[in-house]
Structure formats: structure tokens, C-alpha cells
Image 1 (cartoon, helix red, strand yellow):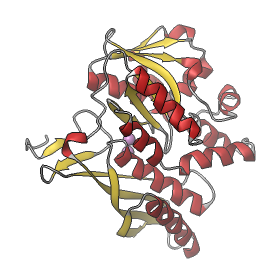
Image 2: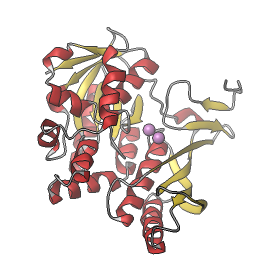
Image 3: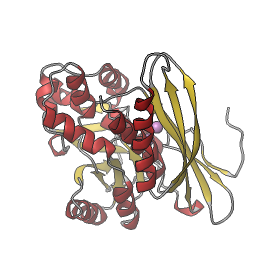
Length: 315
Ligand code: CO
Ligand code: CO
């Protein structure tokens, strides 16, 4: 049980991206951590992805990252030391790009390599952006294409084209900084990032927290090239299928969605984009700004009053 304390602005009751603790009337701390096993072969790229992914949960709260700590599990007897140096260098590069500082970290010996970060950010206590503010009539904007889980699975099987793996790595290493700043400037009502639970899972969390429903325009969801082909070949991670089992009780009109599209919509993402709910005018302006900045900004659905906590598929 969480201790009740008025300084705790966001705990884990609504599956938000990070915890928020009020230090004063002007400043609140935002804290999160994430780490995982390698999802790409190149150590530096893995470091960049893990850092971008950990930083993302601070951006998703409308906050600015200020400090980070490395979390490392490393098989000292079986892997060359240079590998960890490359991973850390990739992570540091992303921390600096975020305008934050790396303060240190901790390494343990482990049979399986793992890397991630604990990240701290700051935000004005009145400007915390949770997943509970979505209102009927809002449109939903997604800021990165979907498909990293499926493409990485194809990559592990040696079946992905190099250009598809490169594009997936480029989106996973990209910070959600620009998208978060643009979402804030357009008055976002609710925001979260799309990671392990997939688009449907993180949208579900927003709907539950906000007490609303959503229509999801299946064919408006931006995809990484190759995603549909690999999904049709059955190259779908176990986490994606678990997401489908977990989320399907929230689905309305799911029969019109093909099994391949369903796998894509539930695909477990790593370092995915932001999902933002905001008024139609603001949503169109945000999508346009992101596209002009060379980023993804796609309107993928809308918030509705009823049915509450359900995703209505529009094929
Ligand atoms: Co998150
Ligand atoms: Co996380």
C-alpha cells in the first residue's frame, strides 16, 4: 500500500509513466527507471535505445530530465569489457542530448547483459501531465510509428531487411523531447508513452485513468516499413500476444480488425512514441508541427464519453 502523503502527486495507482513528488509550490521531482536485455546487436545503439526509453517516461509526464544513473548487469567472464564501454557511451550521448547529467550508476556481474537508467526530472506541480486528463471530443496523436517489437523479432530470426532494422533503431534511439515540448505547448490534456503494453495497452491505461472511451482508426496508425509483412509471417514477440490477451476485454468491434492488424496494434514497443490527447484544433496543430520538424505526428483516434474504458475499432 502506498502511504498517503500530499507531497505524492502521482504514485502507481493509475499506471502512470513515472512517480511525481512535490518538493515545493514551484517544483516537483519526477522519477522513473527502466532496464532490459539487448534488443539490437550493436552495443552503442543498445545504450542509446535504453537511455531514450528511460528518459521517455520523464517526458511523458510533461517534465524535463535533469539527472540519470546507469543500471548495468554484465557477464564479466564471457563478454569483452569494450562492449560495456560502448553501451555506456551510447547512453551518455542520449543523456546529454536530453540536456541532463549522468551522475553515476552501479554494475553487477550477471549471466545476462542488461542496461538501463534511473532518470530524475523536474516539473511545475501544476503542470504534471498524467494519463488521466483525456476528455470526450479530444483527438489522439501518436508521435512515432509502431512496429519495433515485430521488426526486432524478425531481426532476431535473421529475417529482417537491414534497412528495416536501421529504421527501427532510428526510431528507438530518438528522444521524445521535441514531441513532448510540442504537446505541452499545444495544451495536451493527457499523455503517455507507448512501450511494452503496445498502443492498445497504453491507450487502455489512459481510458481507465480518464474514465472515457476511444475510437481507434486502425489504418491511421503509422507503421515502420516491413511491420505488416513480418507480422503476416508470424514474426510476433510473445509480449505482443500477451498484450492482446490482456487488452481484448476492452475491445469493441474487434472482429473487423484482421489478425495481422491486431498483432500490430498490440505490438510491444521499445522506446515508442508519445500518445497525446488534446482538443481537435490543438491535435491538428501538434501533428502539423511534428511533421514540419521531420517527426511523426499522426491522428490515430478520438476520445468518446461512452463506452467507458473501451477501445472501439474503426477499420
Ligand atoms: Co511509460
Ligand atoms: Co517504463
